[in-house]
Image (tube, rainbow over all chains, first blue to last red; front, top):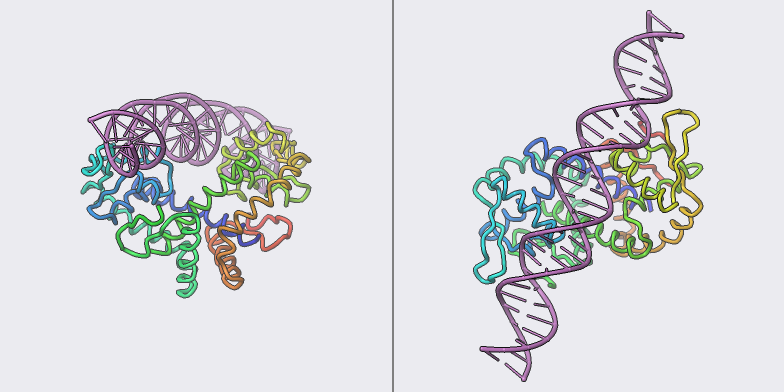
Length: 154
Length: 154
DNA sequence: TACGGTTTGTTCAAATTTGAACCAGCCGCT
DNA sequence: AGCGGCTGGTTCAAATTTGAACAAACCGTA
């Protein structure tokens, strides 16, 4: 299981690097960044809590907590869902957008430098295809590209 | 950054599956399992705390805590280090070995079913090579094979 | 041998994460 | 309309993780 060991170590270390860079560069944690990023690519920059939790792969209570944090610092806002009385939508504020725009380049640079750049173009496509397969085998639909978020196999 | 998104989602989900299986099958958490696994492949089934922390990629205090947990349930024992008065070695107990032997097959089955099996043999070698490169770029030596755990570039 | 700078492992407080319990609102069926 | 089952989100307690602070021990040098 060399593959597994290498994968595991690399992903742990990468996670650590990302946290470090993100924290230093913007004060965000990785989960928080993921929330902002997901919201920014959602229609109207907003998303239902449950859907968001599924995309970010975090528990419902975990999302409640982090959205609370983001709300405190003004990057996200909670809005009642029009179609469902009990629903809550997390909305990216304009400040949230600014923060993301300011933070994203550095983040992507790290991801690229430490992960992506180690793949050849062919390997990268291969890896992407496989990881998508892996994810969907575990019951998540990874949107192929900028397409809207479909219900998948929910 | 489709690749990154796919990778991220897949790894989160995989982690979740692993935790689930491990917990159900043996009561261990993933970090705990990693500690046992690392110890089991170390010479004399023992390792210095700091070295172990580096291999598992966890903070020193995090390791102290988890080794404490493992000690409580009798899978690991703390022994003074002969060569260094302040040092502590974590040692796999015979019960720890049994637990690992009992748990490993199920764990590996999950890893295989959800990750490894989605790769062709060539892709797998490719991925392993790349992940090793990724890890060492971030300052970790991933042992090439079943060789003893050398000091690497420590 | 004594000294300064490092390294080792633990302790501590603070932040985060999860699952269970919970209430409110939705939906299909009668 | 009314009932029963389910879903959505929050609250809560418990577990885990991290970095900083700390005491002990190592090492090279005088």
